[in-house]
Image 1 (tube, rainbow, N blue to C red):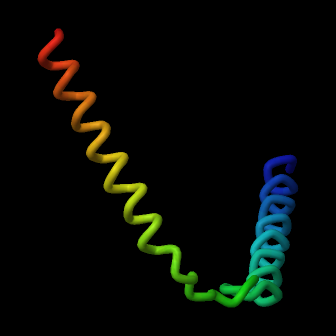
Image 2 (cartoon, rainbow, N blue to C red):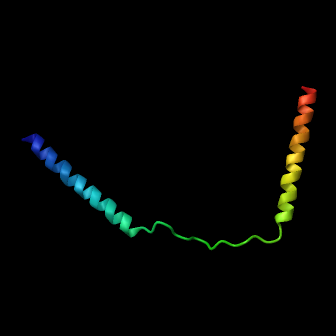
Image 3 (cartoon, helix red, strand yellow):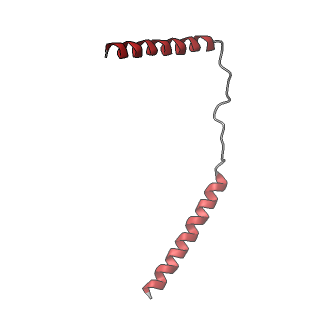
Length: 69
């Protein structure tokens, strides 16, 4: 008899869990926009210069490390 009660309890809890998941999925939006995107100002050239000089610097350091080591 204990097995039947456990099965009934398991089925009831499973149905309740599935209903709660469906309710939660209906309540929450899939996508929510927090902030509207803005195009950055004219600092792209400065950022590009920083990236290029960093790449050149690391290349020089790597070449020195190869020649010394």
